[in-house]
Length: 342
Image (cartoon, rainbow, N blue to C red; front, side, top):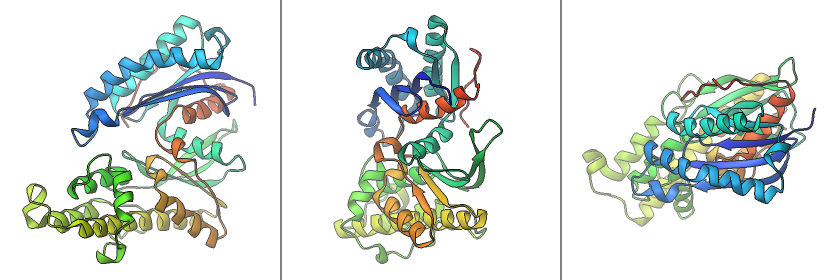
């Protein structure tokens, strides 16, 4: 595979990120600017707030990347950016910046799919990962299973084999945390509260497994948490659980989500006859999920590729890894490259 030096940008949701990478693996410099504190007041990501924050820190971040990497724009081979899926306004900030920089520097532009980048992060964590394999991408906006093989150019091709029928798992974490009075973002807070709880207190184990035997569903579990925490009064009702009850509900919620994710992923791996499972996305930073999928895969004789937590949440290193493979295979996008929310 040809060598490359690529600047990659990520702005699909509420993290502004950039990286300069050599050959899709060697990170010369990177940054991630989190917006968690900006959105905590609202209990979720506010698109316009996210867009403004991207605009404020993206180009100063790029300047810092070159300074830390010790390279100049003239040495780049390409500029890459996430162009789908995500918040459309947030994507536009990153893609517009990438277009302007590519035009100003006379460099090729490479558009990267956010989901494919999350899967590429698993390959960074485990270089031995080989196709075919099953990839689970689980985040605030996505809960999907993919069969991954190679196309004619030798680049990984992702074919959807399962998805959530309603909420994404990460979205359900955020909503459950809010119902339990824990705050935002929900994932780390649910995980922390669950450590002091008993998952068996609430009988939710199979709540995320629809009858089709393939896909996921998290809306019913979210409703179960609502009734346990607030009763029939609904979202505006007072919290009915004491501290122990909140911990038990958090543990039951987390156990149900992890059970669904692990069992459906193992089922897909068996059905497709693959030897590897890859995990990616923000929810992949959850310790219970990481341990659960490792244990289940090990018992089934399957190998697992899981990125470190810092590469599970949105970042530009994963974008650079995917961009390198696309660029080496000849991918070039015009300055008319469009963004897409889905």
